[in-house]
Amino acid sequence: MKTLIKGTPRISVIIPVYNRYASLVRALESVQAQTYPVYEVLIVDDGSDEEIAGQIAALEEGVVRVLRLAQNSGAAAARNVGMAAALGEYIALLDSDDLWRPEKTARQLAFMQQTGSRFSATSYWRHFHYGIKAGWYELYEPAATVAMRHIVSGCAFATTTCLFERSLLAALEPQDEALRRAQDWEWFLRVVALTPVRTLREPLAVIGMHRRPVAEKMFRAATYMRRKHLRALAGKNPLLALRFLSALGVMAGGAAYREGRWLRVLWYTTLAMLCWPGNIPAVAWQRSKNWLFPFRTRLHKNEPPWARGGGGGGGGGK
Image (cartoon, rainbow, N blue to C red; front, side, top):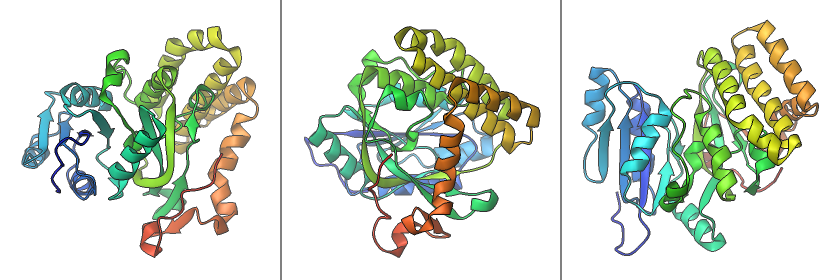
């Protein structure tokens, strides 16, 4: 890993992990390959099994620190521990099954300094490991500036692409540890209420997309988030509240669909349609347009898009 020049902004990277080692090593290598070196890497072991925990602990060297939780407490708890221990002026989040392009920290930090933003995200590639998309890379581009109307409609950007000023944490409550799914979306609702989120429209990360049996956790998350946020959103703008309810229905309905829970699919899809009729068609269009229009180069098979020359494109908009 390159040495950080004295006096330049320090970036702390937080990687929560649970019972993963091989993918964690790849994620860590992508951090160590950054053209702008990071100040520290905090790997937070969320109560992994003893054998894997020993392998993770052995990664501690140089700027890499390993923090271990006594029991599995969820990604939110692990990130909170990391954020509390971070020393850099900036914090970057990375999941243990994701990767960064080598220029991510350099490009994103420069973008923040140029735009004066305090919290930023980037475009990214989704790498699918299941279903008919297995092996494919799909480009996802958030809005240039993520506003409340975007974030109430779903998790508008990816955790792995986030870079933000550590000073924001003084005015921002930690991630909600009661949630085992959608904890990032819930936190982003509060982030966007505090400060605008600017997006660098370059795909600088790769997000691993895996199929996991999470429907029950998604159902509980939808109920919990409705109870926590709906009244406040309705007080600000009833239309935001309706979009939020619809998005919760889409999230839970999608989880039900992936596990063949058809009555739940019908229930949540009906809820989504009643609250915001345009949401289901919009989601269907978003998820199918790359297949309908492959000439837009948003899909690549079996190899990273940048392996074909160029970065895979960063323009376009929604």
